[in-house]
Length: 333
Image (cartoon, rainbow, N blue to C red; front, side, top):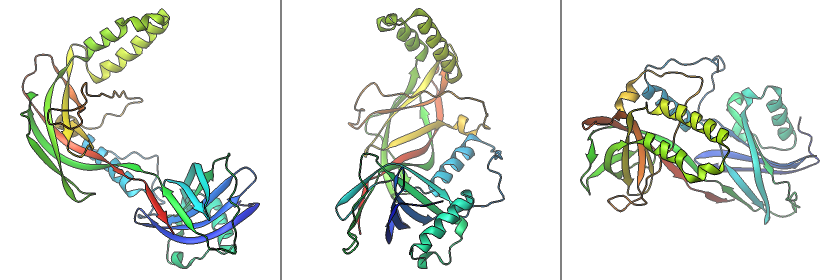
């Protein structure tokens, strides 16, 4: 139940990332100060679906595309601060839940806001289960704003930047080795509605097992207890074995993009495989050993798949997705 010591009603609608967001009020409670907002989900939540029920996918591609689609359709607002009459509330944490997931709590909160003067005109035709109530908690070190209610509530919001993964699914046939400099490739960005340019510099083998042996022979490791080194090595090599069987190399793809966006490449073989569900999975991140690629842009690398050490053929890969940054936004009401 919401029983604030103090509450300042805001009652303003603002469009954030294309969604109408209702700034309801700021409240001061015993242990926290909060900005309350409300908005509607862009999709309908089906109550009859068991969230623990796993969908059976026929390929890794289908499962990954579905995961991206779910994240793109979900909506969460990363408000980092609000300025009211030149008094700032900086938020250190937040929470948001659809009404259907909050049991009676959400309806009690909504009733509290309505009883205290929240305008409901925009919400009369909305399914209550699809309404989200979000709470942004102010930093403990800051004071609750001293608002003069006889004056206009001049408000400025700061919405944090965020990253989103966007599917591309563009097949590419590559020969092992170096790629000719200046060989441009294109893909269509469905979010920004434009073509983007990228370069594949090369795809070649990387002896990760040799690097692993050198790493644990490094003099800096000798400063650690022998038992700790042994345990760390065993864990690392077990993880490595899952990603690249011993005696094989990793096929690594090196690429550049003209506008610096990050791309994700996978082998067609992996994407076509049926998902293998495990209790745990291993992941390794790789960084290019040089700052710029052969075409003068930021060099990035992407793991494709394990290959035999003498492999010198071709590989079918897929430009699967890109990550785009939605920049920070300042909104003045």
